[in-house]
Length: 601
Image (cartoon, rainbow, N blue to C red; front, side):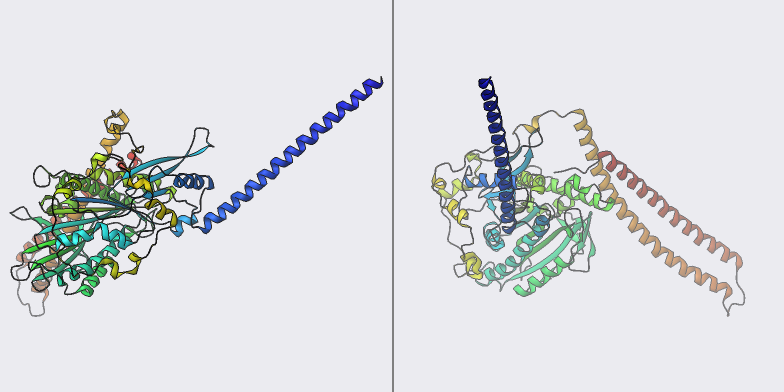
């Protein structure tokens, strides 16, 4: 009996020990969870202080990836021979609006490759992971690079090319989603171009193109909703015509001569202030037009064109999901923008493939490419595209679309060493003459920013890493889309959607044309009605005038009937044109509802 009692007390002691152990473990877990919450709160505060708020887990995953990237960034350097097409990407820092939304940085630029870290959840809906996609370009500028860095490597070689006096045509495009920094980048480049053009002409060793024998003129216009407007002449409507030689002419476009840098900067600033902007879901002041600033160098004696530089700030692109609450005006703008961007891509690809002077270049697919026809068809044409991207995780789809667009322009495969442009091999055998302007003040002397080491220690360590000296510093990373994705057969629904999108583009184009026709007819009707009203007044005075003694009432009635018939005819024509326009409006509305979203490129 005593043994049973002792066993009972022993069992109770073991139970009490187990309970105490469970309580201790529970308390340890609670304390560990509390410590983790405190650590997460402290890490969140550190992220906020560093200007990178957002999901702590995703930020930690991005930080881990950046601590040991699959490749290191190479130092920026100019190529011996500038390529015919140069594709650059610029990443901007997070802005205050994105910080308020607690967005985090999801883009990494390791020159010449750009990585997009898309935040994903696994099928359980809890586990977080990153989908890393990469694209390789000629230059990749991170948030630490200034606009002068972008200008130095992307645009400065084109200034020498245009000022050579050999009739060179150069074009610089700024492309990207709305709010990604296109206009900020382009305005900075425009100011530097204005300074360097006159700097080079004043100190040029080439007698063919010098400030003494060369006029510098500037024209600035925008393409908005299928209409061309002169930004330096009170937004005057312009017409796009083609002469007998096949040259595209913008009728009524004013060109202003600039005698120095200050005058040129003043004209460019005036054009930028007059540009059309509207609020969208992505940006409070989104550029809704393609702004084209053209600098022309002409011989003072013969007015022969010696060179032309076109600076094109493209309208901000948007996904279909970002236009869901837009009115008809914003929808038609987005459709026209996407159509012109698609046509632009095809023209640049034709230029890069060496077909600019041979096979067909589809520059008639949009007014934008038709205006820039000589930039695509001229044998002496050079092009630079600067794709600007937002680092925000919420814009990862936007960023991927922008990078995919820029990548397909030049059709360069990520990690493919054979995709290096031909100029890299030519530079080994071809001897290049020295610079035409040795007296020219270096770019770095104009601004102390280029002489400062503004890179972070981690970036400087990547730039001096031994990995950059290997024979193949670009291991083939995983591409963001399979190479054979375009070869997959479309399903019936996809074909139907594609058909509806094409029909919507045609309807929008017809809508712009009908709107132009309606406005022109309305104006002519008003003018003719004014003339008829004047004639009616004279006719009435011929019957009721104080000095009228005798009059022919039959002639009065006959003439009045003719005037009324003419008025009826004018009103009927205007009413018919208005009915046609309303039909197109209704058709566009039905197609927009049927699609549910705008097409993406």
